[in-house]
Length: 380
Image 1 (cartoon, helix red, strand yellow):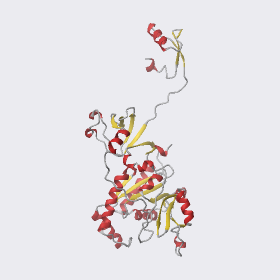
Image 2 (spheres, one colour):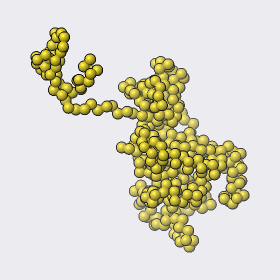
Image 3 (cartoon, one colour):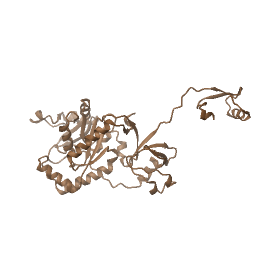
C-alpha cells in the first residue's frame, strides 16, 4: 500500500514506528511492524535523492532471426522474430545468453540471442565472402595499369570484425542534415558518374574534395584545378599522421583525399559527396562526418552491359567493358553487399542513373526532415 501511494522511496530511512525508535536493525523494524495493529505512523528521514529511471537501450539488428529455426532457444514460442534493420528496445540483459526485447513499433517482449551467444554461434560458420582489395582511389586517375594501393587507418577494430557485428546501439534524434554522402559500390557500377551528376545538378547543395598528389603539376593543371599538389615527403608525413582518408600510389606518385578537404566542403554549407572504399567507413562513420551511406548495387549482367554500351555511345565513357570485366563488377558488388550491408543507409540497384539520382536526393531530404535512428557513438 505504501509503495502504491508513493510515500516511501529508495534511500529513505525509517526512524520510528508508532513513536518507537527502530534504529538501524532491520529485524527490529520487522518486529515492530508485525506487532502493530490498525494505523501505523512512521517517522521518516527522506533521502532527498530523486530516483533515476533506467536508461532505455535500443539496438539496430544486423542479421535476421527466426526463433522457430533456433535449436538453442529454451522456448521457441517465447522467441522474438526480427529482420536486419529492425530497431528493438532491450528490456533485460541479465542472462548471458538470452535477452528480452520488443519491437519499437509495439508488441510483446520476447527472447533474442545475446551478442555473446550469437557471436559464438557464428564463429563456427565460415563466411563465403572474400573482400575486394582496399583502395580504388587511383581508378580513373589515368588509363594505365594500377600500382599497389596502400591503406592505413586507425581505430578500425569494430570494422575489422564486421563479420560478427550483430547489434548496434542506436538512439532516436530529431531531424538533422547529414554532412557527407558516401557512395559505395563495385568498380564500374557508376559511382563516379552519379557523383558528377549530383555536383552538376545541385552545385549549391553538393560539393566534393579534390585529390592531393605528389606528382609535379602539368601545364593544364593550373587551369583545371583538378588536384592539390604537395611534395612526396610532406604527403608521406601527413599519411603517417592519419590526415588522409584514403591514399594510393600510381606511376610512382602518391594520391589521396585529405580529411580537412572534407571539412572545408561541409563548412561551406554543402554536403560532401565521396565515392569511397567501404573500408573508409571506419573513419567516416562518426559524429565528425555524419555520413549518409548509399550502396550502388550492380544490376543484372545484361542490364549492366547495355548501360556500358549506352555510355560509350553517348561518349560519357571511352571504354567498352569486356564480359569478364562486367561479370567481375557483378561479383564484386555481391561481395561488398554481403560484407558491409550493416552500414548502408540506402541500397539502390543502379540500372538508371536519373532514377538513382532522384532516389538518393529524395532520401537525403527525408532524413533531414524526420527523426532518425543513429549510432549512440554519434551522441556521446
